Length: 332
Image (cartoon, rainbow, N blue to C red; front, side):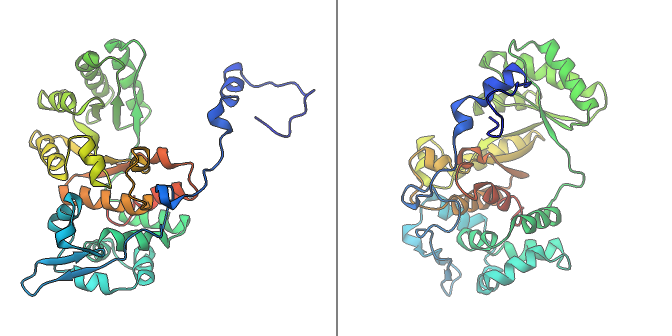
């Protein structure tokens, strides 16, 4: 609603726009930060101090102020697969301000940033990106982007799950320049037909567009095994162990699922959702930025080709969108 509009002034907005503007969700403001609930974007007082200690035989004794005996499954996976043990002592000894400057500095090549950041723990990485301003984050994202040619993803759906209409809309999306197309379905059993329509329609204007049908993980994998989709992105990872457990998952089960897609030549990226741990009541009083740093480390250790942040759940928290952008830059 426009607060400057007088009561007598005629409202020329479309009826549906007026209706949407009056919905309660559009009247909400920012939520107050509450570290005790995990409703804080950066630097919770309960975030762990960065640390990395190893024994003489090379085994890890401590990571991020937690001793090896107290590691949960996420800690164990990150220690084994996500942190470079050779690079870690040097990287962890660097100051956070020096690391932040290196990420932004155009004179430091991407390969050097990857090497150094490969030795950082989640807590250290979270503190580094928390120092970056939005413009600096954009600079880092430009430098660290791995994809040769950036492209946009389009959502192609219709309420009837009509595969013919899906095919036509998919072809239109490719004509407009989209190179990845995603469909969702209200009825799970419609997924195969929708996936076929999306795949065929996407290849009509120009070959090479990637398609996926975003549904429940087991069905989506089946579509991939049958060759009906060419990428997937709805395999979710989380920043606390309890949220994994609630979904009958572990980092290892997600790694196996990712490998299953890769075995069929399917492009694979993981999804994390900033604020998902808060919604599940299992944020452990940690900041969203720190938990996202753990998720990105998991994606790196799992070996996924990419990671996306579905962080809209935490968007009402001050500085939350900044944290979403921050976790899309250095580790990738």
